[in-house]
Amino acid sequence: MSMSLYRLRNGNESRWAVRADGEWRELGITLADLLARPLDEARSALEAAARVIPGGDALPPIDHQEVWAAGVTYLRSRDGRKEESGHGSLYDDVYDSDRPELFLKSSPWRVVGDGDAVGIRADSGWDVPEAEIGLVLNSAGEIFGYTLGNDMSSRSIEGDNPLYLPQAKIYDRSCALGPAIVPSWAIPPGPFEIGLRILREGKEAYAGTTSTSSMARSFEDLAGWLFRALTFPAGAVLLTGTGVVPDAGFTTQPGDTIEITSPALGTLTNPVIAVGKDG
View 1 (cartoon, rainbow, N blue to C red):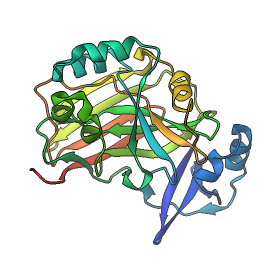
View 2 (view 1 turned 90 degrees about the horizontal axis):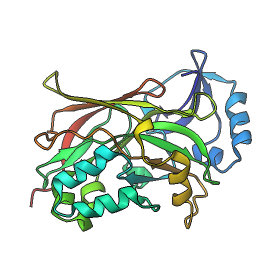
View 3 (view 1 turned 30 degrees about the vertical axis):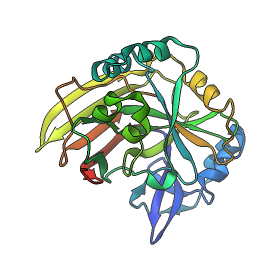
View 4 (view 1 turned 90 degrees about the vertical axis):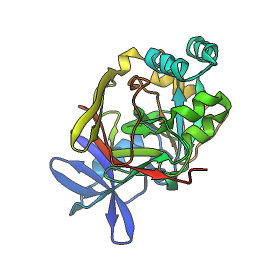
C-alpha cells in the first residue's frame, strides 16, 4: 500500500493520519471533511499532509459515516441464502434484478476496528462472518477509497424468515472495518482478491477465497443505487457483499479469530465474543 489513511488513538481522542513512505503524517482534518470535498481536493489534502507524528493504535477508519451493505451480489451468496431459507426464490429474484438489496448495517459508533472483538448473537445458533470490500464514498457518491469489512451475520435468524434480516445483521459488534482506508487513486481499481480464515484454538477451522471479479454487479452500480434517494453529507461506507460463505455445517464460535485479507488492503483481524441475551 503506497498510501493509506488511518484513524489513530490520541489519548482519549483520535486523529487521522496518512501512512506513506514508512512515516505517519498528521492529516489535520476529519474523514467527514475529506468526504465532503471533490475527489481532487481530497487527494490534494492527503498529499499535503507533512507533519510527521508517532504512530498509535488503529481505531475503526470511520467518524460520521453510516455503514450500508449490499446482499446477494455473488452467486455463492445467493446459494448460501437459499441453503438456509425456505424462501429461495426471493434470493434468485434479487440476484437477477436490476435493483440490488441494500440495507443499513451500522451506525458509526457501533463499528469495531482491527483487533477489537466482533460479536455473534447469543440467541442464534448459526453464525458466520462475511468478508467484503467496503467502498468509502464521498458526498457525491464517488469512490474515495477502499477498506476491508466484516458483515457478521446470523444465518439461523435470517433463515427463519427473510423479514428478520435486520435482527440477523444489525446488533452490537456486528460490523468491523479496517485496518485502514486505501485511496482509490493509490491502487488499481480491482478486481480485488479476498481471503477469509477462521482460527479455532490456534488452528484453521475454515478458509476460503474469492475475487470481486465474481460479483454480479459493479461497485459503481451499487453506489449509484445507494445515492439514488439518499444524501450523505459526511460520505458513507458501502459493503459490497460476500463471495465466501462457509458450508451449512459450520458456525462461528466465541473464542474464534477471524482474519479477512486482501493483498491490496491488508488484513482485518478480530476475535469473536457472544453479545446479547439468549432468550
